[in-house]
Length: 310
Length: 150
Image (cartoon, rainbow over all chains, first blue to last red; front, side):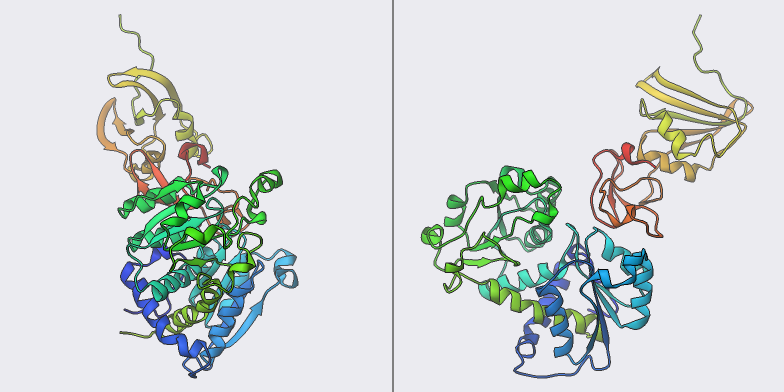
């Protein structure tokens, strides 16, 4: 399997075998990501991180991943300080970054921006989130977290909770979980249901997701509870946002009847949807999940830049 | 006496079996009238053997059948007839290509293909009949393809 120079734009571009291979590589990266071991395999390589939208974990973990592998990072976290402010097209910004670096990481508010970037760049492009579209590296680290905690993905009952309409992470994740034959339950307010096209994709893999607004009932059978923030910035209408924010809250009382080994995940940042009282319980996996972004992104960077072969 | 609603043409192209109501969109795809000075007749909601249909006739001009495949996006059952001296010399059923470039606009207003970027709209054809297309950039599927023709 050769990933050299490959773009990482959408989880749908990868087969199950390819995803398994990436996750295997990520597992080997854990001691390096934790700083327990050191390597220099991307020495002299430069990563350009172009963040046209705010990010904490994705940007920092990409940068950490590159540094842990001995590479260097250039880029920006605030587009207002770039030529985009002067009206430069994304295509031109990408051409420039392409000539300055060996790989490009891009986050952009418009869907399809990473795919466009890949058209204009010779170097590999890694999508760090395009609007309400794809966020493949988040999806991979979510799969990696479930796999390392539960030892397998197939057969686990995964409850996806919150904003399933606008949330980009849950669309890719539902697709990937169905690819791995997990059981899926979607819990959301009526106005924020999972789009039909995502449900249809799950069905194409032979997975029939349950949809409900009753979280208490869904939680009893859950092996994984994946909570998402209701994102104000994705709502076209502030009134719609105000009607649904705070609909669900995950706290110790809610988890009383949950399985003992239930894991609670969240792509973060959280606002009100997970009570901090949960943080010190064995259920809370979201901080470990955030750490897993580093080994997964190390695996991806080493594969697309190093051309590591099996 | 049989009423003749659409007169035969001597030479040119007849696009038959267009989904009723979509003839004007077919003209739009073919960039008519901008691309031609030929006489073009349009019949809308004509009753045929298999129910209602639209017909477009372009005189003195033979259109390239491959180019006309784009029409399949809004009229998957259309047939193209090349006419010479009142006879049909070539008949071609439209077939949607696997990729459609520059014909339809993405229905997602925040898709990068709708921004000021040097790219044309681009869609993968997911299903040929009924036509379903998926944006190459944002991966969304427009609900009504006909509405998105540019």
